[in-house]
Amino acid sequence: MKKVGTHLVVDAWQAPADLLNDPERIREGLLNAVKAGKATLIDMCVHQFSPHGVTATVTLAESHIAIHTWPEYGYFAADLFFCGKGEPKEAMKVLQAALGAKEAKIREIDRGFPEIYATHQATVKKLEELVSSTR
Amino acid sequence: MKKVGTHLVVDAWQAPADLLNDPERIREGLLNAVKAGKATLIDMCVHQFSPHGVTATVTLAESHIAIHTWPEYGYFAADLFFCGKGEPKEAMKVLQAALGAKEAKIREIDRGFPEIYATHQATVKKLEELVSSTR
Image 1 (cartoon, rainbow over the protein chains, first blue to last red):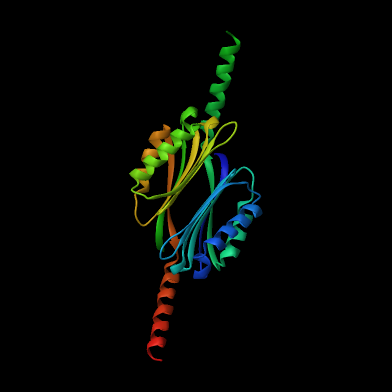
Image 2 (spheres, rainbow over the protein chains, first blue to last red):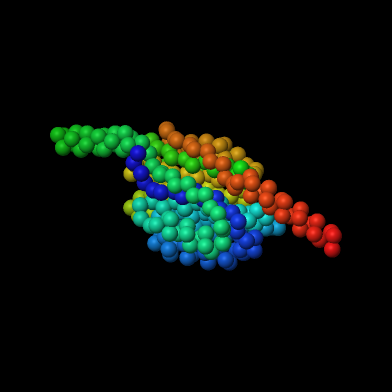
């Protein structure tokens, strides 16, 4: 596989409802997570639902972070997708601490495409250069 | 598991570089995907990188969609996280067609938390009600 990035798929629970329903707490937690992950912020959207729940998406130069909270369950889902640079695990530690989740299941997924496709692209490029040089 | 949503983790390749580097095409594709997925748009950020590549995050009432493109590889990574309502697979079909990817690996991940945690929460609530009614 030609890997372009690391994606942490996180389900976290046993978190206090009031923290999970506080958009400012979540915004601050995300900003600190971005800093801890050595990432570069491009944009952020934080949205509070009625009667409860917060969703936030963070656009990064390194890809994205997204979080969705269910205060009624003490649960949140988070995704931290970092290509190349950055430290998603450090970002996750900060986010989990900010929202006080005692338990978390973290799945690490490599993102990318089949190696043979990368090899094929490189071969095609070489052929094009060869054809171009012999013209 | 107490499931709160379905998450499609998508790696797609063999897509034309010009489509993957066109932020307006991607914005339009995402809007059509949201519509096809019967989702509700809250916010969208589309960002073009230099020299190439586009990142977009879409905040939905149902959760989020995110996409990151690597035109130099003819590759894009997409995430479609839909809680409860909506049809992420229909959204993905539209997005893949809009960006002309001939191949895609789609992983479907259930998001949520352990059933026992939900059971425990329900038990605590019942106990609280019982204590409250006997006071």
